[in-house]
Amino acid sequence: MFTKAIVRTPGCSLTSGLTASKLGTPVYQKALEQHRQYIAALERCSLDVLILEADEAFPDSTFVEDVAIVTPKCAIITRPAAASRRGETAAMLPVLEDFYSYIEKIQPPGTLDGGDVMQVDQHFYIGLSSRTNRAGADQLIEILQRYGMTGSTVPVTEGLHLKTGVTQVAENTLLAAGEFIASPNFSDFRILPVPEEANGGANCIRINGKLLLSAGFPEVSRQLVDQGAELIEVDISEYAKLDGGLTCLSLRF
Ligand code: CIR
Image 1: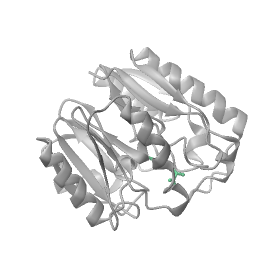
Image 2: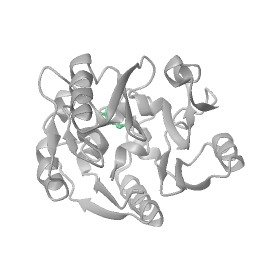
Image 3: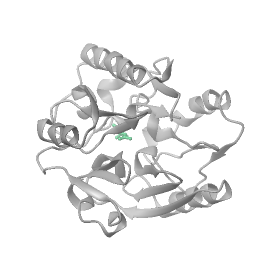
Image 4: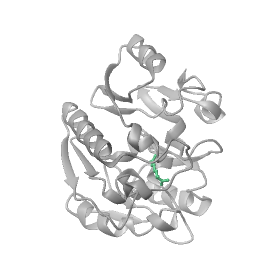
């Protein structure tokens, strides 16, 4: 059961955020409206949402998921690999201090983005990606173990982060795309495969019995409804232009 979420309003500088996609530049007013809808969706899941002010100095700072891992026992400030994002963590530390007594930090030479971390109960799957390196993952596993949790690594060769391609949608069930559909790392789970053309459709958020899904993936949506999911669809087209998914826009705890 989650009770809180943290989000950060996008600044106008969002239009110069990092991207590898060819979907064009985000339209700022539309991004702002979509952010409001996203917050409303979190509130429909009974979360109390803390909305941080836009930070123009960091174009990607609305993607708050990448700068911290929030667990029931402690929070961990990450160390984003992208140079333009490294400074985002400083502003998140005092915010988390209001909620957590124990805060750990990923240290150099480790790099780690929260988008690479998927929690399933007390276990955390950590993607080794272009953003998260072995040193960052090993540090996170050591921290988790100290607090009675566990972690393991998963190679990520397609997409930006682990959760770009795989997320939990129900007890023991993952929604998975591409390389994660048949991954031995997830062989103990029931896998709902996302079709190749539904790029972005594997990034869901499971909150308090409801599922948030990006709008525009009718096949994925039908599959999830057939499984009995209570779906809330949210249009985040302007964030997809910056390789952002649903999970990356909030921290939930
Ligand atoms: C970046 O490249 O860092 C941002 N434009 C997108 C981050 C997306 N984060 C996420 O999926 N957790």
